Length: 387
Ligand code: UD1
Image (tube, rainbow, N blue to C red; front, side, top):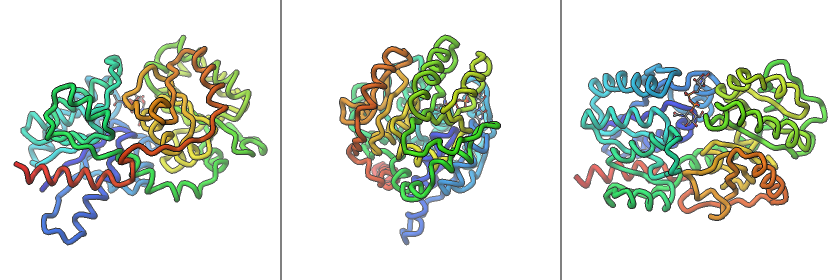
């Protein structure tokens, strides 16, 4: 069997790493049916900090093929990926294309594969925010409509797919593959020192004072979604809250996504952010470093999907800077650590105060057990046997 798996952007890397390891383990197991595997990187993320650093930390082999599509509008990214990926498929003729998550690479490569008559497997299928203004929601819907095999992270996702009329035999509940990566790397991350991570990744000429981060009493944040960073009024209000309220109370560590940095500069907010005492601005940091910071953070403010999931298993109280989530299993009402606060400062402030009163409460949803990748590979192999 020949499989091409695809990555494009940062959140894909932690999902593909365990899948590749499962293939290697299968090939070394003495099983006669070997799997030929090629890794394609579309090149959507290309900075060292956004891409190569993750390959290194997660021990992902170098991509066999890099499509080098780079940045651009959504149509440019999707279109350029499709043109380049079609050539790869015609040359390599795989039995399966495996896509993960919900980025532009996921959509572009699913469409291209189906048009070439190649089977598509989607890992992390069935997540739905119901918010069609999110580019990722469009990517999820199209990918799941086309996929032959839909591997879901939780039972709510199975329900979503059933409601959309997906045939039962295409859906397999496998658990959350990103938690495989977290479990495999937790021990190593725990060895890192929070202060050293900050010192080594500080942005620009900033310096840490000797007593900063003395006690493990810091907040951690990430923010990159267009809905939060692309509108001046929203970004200004959020920035003021962070600088004038959170950073006044405790050190706030903020590894900045390139999009957010650009917007802060464009909207004239960069100076305020830079000069705020206790706001520790970092360049994008690696996987292990982020995991380490998350382990001890008093709370996390984020609009990332993956971090909501990691907070759930680690128990870090999480303010999710979104009005909806495709990952409801991470919410407090389902026993998780996250609460939706959107980008309205009043609401964020109220929940911020509530959440500070909460203790860590780790929770492990069903099958988030570190063995999802093996189940994914088994599902692909079983599918082949069925037809
Ligand atoms: C993408 C994903 C999003 C994911 C996020 C994680 C889609 C639709 N979105 O959004 O789901 O949560 O990745 O990071 O696929 N840039 C760089 N260097 C890079 C990559 C990007 O400077 O290596 C800058 C460019 O100016 C670019 C901007 O960041 O225009 C945004 O990058 P892009 O890949 O378009 O989307 P993300 O916001 O990163």
